[in-house]
Length: 83
Image (cartoon, rainbow, N blue to C red; front, top):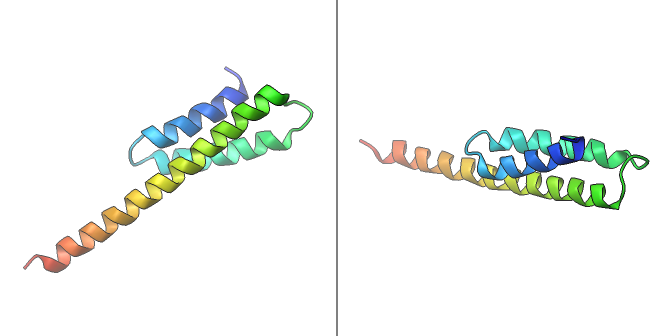
């Protein structure tokens, strides 16, 4: 497995893994950004895979951030309304 495929796998895992997807997404995004800086190594096909991994990581970060915000609001409402 190459580094390019690892960035894509981290991106996909950040979307489908509950609760720890935020951490995986952050690592995937950072890893993909480092790979994109290596212009000499990456060809056009590798760049597309790295970009897809970065996009998936950002989507995973966004989804899990929304999930955590909704979970926080629901817990706050639950504890404020319980008597």
